[in-house]
Length: 352
Image 1 (cartoon, rainbow, N blue to C red):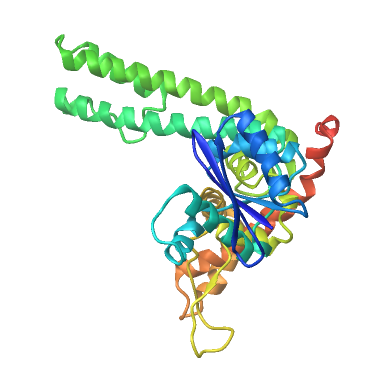
Image 2 (tube, rainbow, N blue to C red):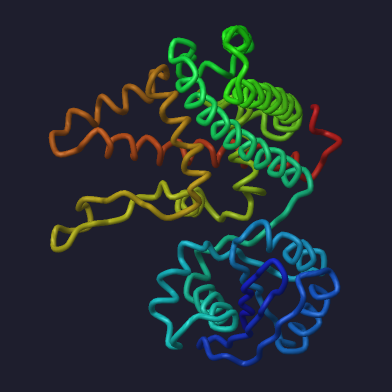
């Protein structure tokens, strides 16, 4: 049987379904440790002959429950939120509620059983993922502050406007600060100087997080870092999103998960017909592989040769050729992570 879980900040709702997708039991608990343990006990009672927990992959609200399930020895799979939209539209129950969603999660897990990788949460990977996610939040916040600052500077004196993407540099910030302080005192000047100080503080914290990530990532995935186009931040994103690569049964399963596996788009043209862009999968992983592809397309001979060779086909667009490159890179990333996977089991050998 499968137990679908719809996780939320304050509560988790679970529905047990049999192999035909029929609802057998339902339970709602508080999203706290005692609630997690209550849910595990209920699941064992509702499905005494074996069960798989299917949890919607909402990281910040499902993490605690998933860690409790794994610590209790329960098998868990994540259900991507992108798949849930179609499942809800095709559901047999009208409306939307936590039990309806939990049942939809269970049914989707039953249908996609072979394509949903088992969950493995490693403490070292979790640390990297948290640091990486926090850095992403800070970068987004810095971008918002810079945008507000640039409009304020434009309003005060357009001649002081810094070059695009230059405020990450201490020299550019110092130049702008000097210009702002030379202006007559005003509320706008005060706000702009405050925003500039905020940009400097965020930049320092972002740099510090990058320095914290470097030794952690280097210890766990040196093989991944050896791939052309893979730097510390890209490797951290891949490791944090993929987790233990051994949960994927093959490179093809990993490609399906990260959205680089092509989707057939043919009818009546045979098996080798055209393919279209895959908009599913983990988009964070897909973006990381896209960055690797961009770097290799500029400076890696093998990638450039592949793009040039496929570019000679008049029926294939540049974007289609680029998708082929990303699919090859997905396999390269998978092999590198597989080669480094033993380091997750033996921390004492990470420096070897």
